[in-house]
Structures are given as C-alpha cells and as structure tokens.
Image (cartoon, rainbow, N blue to C red; front, side, top):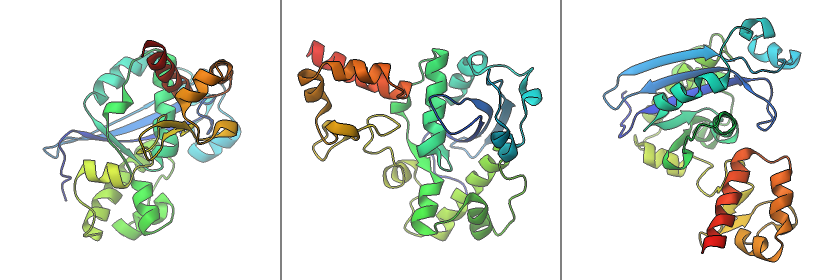
Length: 256
C-alpha cells in the first residue's frame, strides 16, 4: 500500500541518554522520508550528546560513549536536519509524548528555528493503543506478521513504524489514508499549546494552564494578575518549548 500524501511524511525515531526532555540528549536519530510519489529515503546517524550515556540507557539501545565520541553534536547537524524536514509532516511511535518534544528541545538548544506548528503529526502508537493496546514489537507481529529484529535500534524501529502504519490502513476500513485525518484523530497534540501539554486550549480555544495551582485558568489572565508567575516558570525546570510558547502569549498580551 502507498500512503496518500500531500506533503512528504517523515517517520523518525530517537535513541537518547534518558527520558527527561529538558536534561537528556539525542544519541541516534533515524529518519524514513516518504514522498507523495512513494519514493522512500532512509537516513540514520549517531550524535555526540556531549554528556555521558548512562549504563541503563546503553542497556536499552546498546550505544556507548565510545560509539559516539567522534560523532557530530546535534548543533553541528541541526541545520541540515531542519532542511531535510522542511515542508514535511512527522510520524513516529510514541512520538507525541517523547520524540517530537525531544527533537523540538534539541532544535531550540541549537538555535535553529524549526517551526513545529506548521506540521501535522501522526503517532502510530496512539492508533495502535486505540485499536490493539500493545508494544511496537507486538504491533509489528500483529499487523505485519513478522518478528521485529534489532528492536531499540533507531533505524529498525523507524522502518517498523512505517510498515505498521501501512498495515493499519489495510486492517481498519475506518482509517482514512490521509495524514490530515490521522493527525486530527490520532495525535495528542490537538489541544496542546506546548508539546509537554503544560498549557492547552479549552473548549473555546483559549490557552489555559494544565498543571499546578492555576490549572484550568486562562494563561493571559494569570500573567496579568500574577506577573511573577511568568518569571517563576521561566526560571523553572520547564522545557524550552513551553517557555517559548508562554513568552509568545505574554508578548501578544503586552502588544495587544
């Protein structure tokens, strides 16, 4: 089956030093770019995270400090990576909760302006969990009737995710072969103001806080009534993407 695409769709997977998007770093990235005409390109590369890789992370993906000591840093590859992703929609497995926020953080740290807001996102795990709640290995066996070799290798996981999505489209008649549909119905970003979901849009399209003492309150109203809350968040251990989104709201209110 060929995906029905209006824009190139890039399936990607990250291996990292850990799961904290504000503190951990990428050690491997693999991308499978599927063009509207069906052409496919696979690119994978190791990244020097500029920090030690914890043994527990190596135990999962098998990548050691020695493996990446001579590899480029993310900052060194960020521009070329952004160019490759220009005009593309994104897809992955558990990408909504981890891979997309992590990639966004790395671009922000590298000072590369990569606008995620203009893209559609398809998370194959969300489709899977709504239809057949299991892991990627189980999804691959269930939908593709094959054993996943080299699980937790970024490239193997990326290619498997692509194959699973195509099989899901064949398996479920109600799934439309359309990225806009899949993004709208099977992405957790629909109501998020920031990738971490610290701020969301309410039923009226107003940005509200989604955590803490101001949960459910209008972000704009809180910033007006309690200006110090902005400084507290900017000094806190929040993702750069969250701080960026908060700053946009603050500047909009100041200039409005």
